[in-house]
Length: 164
Image (cartoon, rainbow, N blue to C red; front, side, top):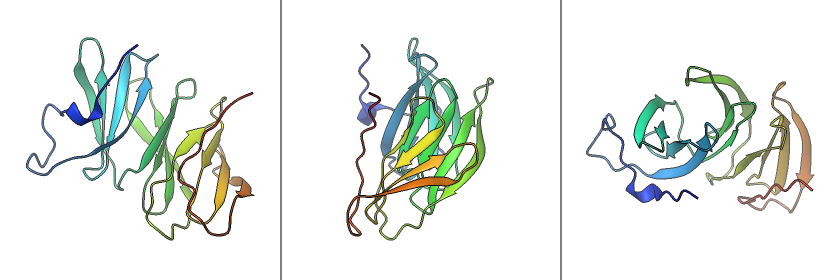
């Protein structure tokens, strides 16, 4: 078992603005749990690390802030709740580069971080919202396939997806 403390990760080489603090907001294992992608909230960066030996593999700066992330190993799909207008879908290429695939539009009323998940087969994105709905999206078409009404306009930030 590998335990990683996100509070002690430092990017080497340093980020573009080494004097401003960065907050690691989430981490996702990839490469069959031999590597780790760390998402940083305010610097808008994703940094991939090899675990043993510990070294940086790549860094990718995106256009929006990063709230929550999810990764699916088989489809190499990476989701980002972007804190602006929804979910961005990326694909991790064989050459370990992130490519933007599409955007899932969500009307965000309050700027809360909502968790994102991928279904077991990696074909459905699952997310909460700030309006009482759980939303299911088809990854390939980018279309909202189902809205599950949970409450009247309340924030749903935490989700747990369990395959039974």
